[in-house]
Amino acid sequence: VNLLLVGSFADDEGAAWAEALRQALPSHHLLLDRKPGLAIDVAIVANPPPGSLRGLAGLRLIQSLWAGVDRLLGDETLPAGVPIARMVDPAMNEAMAETALWATLSLQRGFYRYAEQQQQALWRQLPQPRADEWPVLLLGYGQMGRQVARRLAQQGYPVTAWRRHAATAEAAPGVTLCQGRAALQLALAGARVLINLLPLTADTRGLIDAELLARLPPGAAVVNLARGAHLVDADLLAALDSGAIGHAVLDVFQVEPLPAPHPYWRHPKVTVLPHAAALTDLRSAAAMVAANIETLARGGTPTHLVRRDAGY
Ligand code: NAP
Ligand code: GLV
Image (cartoon, rainbow, N blue to C red; front, top):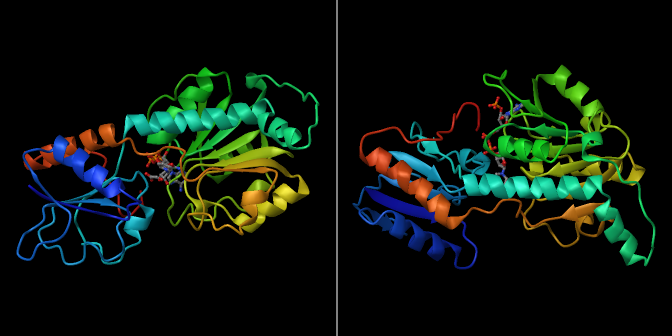
């Protein structure tokens, strides 16, 4: 199988991927550039520049190294009809659960506020609510959302998770599932923390706006771990400045890296992460990609295929 690796890689990230993939797929042929006359079977992509896959006739699979495929699907030159598989990696799901747990614990116990107090050499103890008094609303109950919900529920937080489809299987213990706008509005009214783990699609873009934020109880927190475009920045800043929202933990932004003049960088009620909530783990991710390509080589159907019409 001829494989083409293409992406927008930082520093030596591309070389590290190439090495990990060659080790995981020793009997296949990995290229870093197209060669005239050589047909590519599988494109392995990490946010490839638009147009990168244009004209690749004979392509049998596009394997994304990213979990979110919003940018990939936004490329109008993407070969039509070719299956797209996205990254699903238990190590990444676990990293996401750790980030969500850290943010929720820090909010519940006031640790961000203590960090702010330290800047002013202010010695003041804050109220100490219990985990079971700190309801969390999770937007998205997919690969990441399920692991996040499980870990938060194990820690004692009451978790409600909102998803698109009606639940087909039982939720993890301590997790309540809901769907639809009416249920979302009800869940918002009871949440201390809103955690976003939705894919970015036509339905979810701009979902976290002034109207949604106003449905949260006063002083609730927003944790955005999915995509910057889920959130209307001006609406969040206004809600933070009025005190309607108490704190925001933001890992993802409309423009990345977050530009230096952006108010989020210096806002006392915002914690900024550099899109690091769950980095792809090269070892387990390369093994997942290899398994999908071996399945394809045997004539089988790769796993974790994207529904192009749904956008995730
Ligand atoms: P996933 O398995 O596809 O799960 C998506 C979840 O969102 C599903 O539960 C789905 O509902 C729900 N959903 C989709 N559209 C919806 C809608 N219109 N209304 C309500 N619920 C909706 O995705 P994942 O692997 O968990 O990843 C989620 C996102 O995390 C990715 O798309 C990416 O943007 C982001 N991410 C961020 C980082 C980071 O480091 N910050 C890392 C990896 C991924 P159903 O279950 O009903 O289908
Ligand atoms: C990271 O944000 C990913 O989608 O893998």
